[in-house]
Length: 376
Image 1 (cartoon, rainbow, N blue to C red):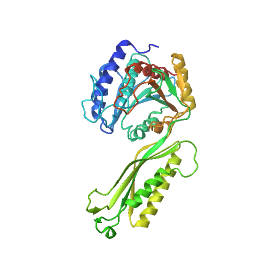
Image 2: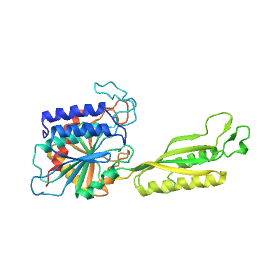
Image 3: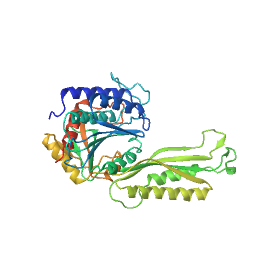
Image 4: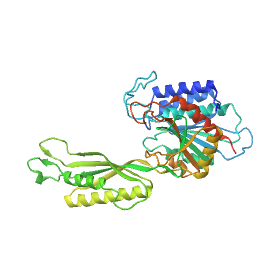
């Protein structure tokens, strides 16, 4: 398996380190975009197209296309975490680092660009550099390109610890669940702590609401469903003031978006009941919404055929990966698949201080992407 040249592998490894050193948070990826575009302009003749907050590159066939266009996606945003380990290319930005491996995803897509640039294409190949995956706000806007360009299939990979290094890991159907962040605020009226009866303190209602959240889901359901309390506050902590407002934040996660929304509705209904009982005003906000990521069988079959042709071991996942992923927005618009490449069985987990993308799997990712780019 040597589809990427040694020279190009060295280039994208260096690019990965540069991206790691200069991470950007979600919706603030301007510096990352400039690094990527500079690399692609210097090393390829691919067409680059700017969009608001993101861009794509495209390799077009010289003559008549043998097949409909195909697309590949890499996410660009980093996490609000300190680096936590000593690296020669460690993040220069305090509290921001690539602890999910998006720097490696971008580098792999640029590796595909390098290899496409020195080959004749038999169809248009789109490389999508997407913002804001970590907060679920990037894919929906980028997915509009699917219809605009007539893209017929789309693929992405994620690095994944706990599996043999360089192995291709996959799951049929649902591979990552839907999720959303729900914050419910209960507003009453503060009063002096010596006269709580003169105010409307939401603490009892918030406590009952938290218990209701931990009791979800109430109804029978198909597959995994979770309601996780991630934050709770009430009042100011001033010993002279009876609390006048508070908030509960939960993450809702389920195999089906419909059931996630049913949990949301149940919790909002309970909040309304408690607010009415205690003379409070209930408000809510939804953030970080992610769709289900469901692989298409035909697209996943292509991935597995290409992996076999490259001599890669393919490991089926018994259970879905519980982390959410906004790639599902693309899969609602055209066939495609999300697959994973193992970092190593004992490799540090994603979103932890000890993690750094495994450079050794870059050649695997580029090889699979390049094989998929060829029309059959």
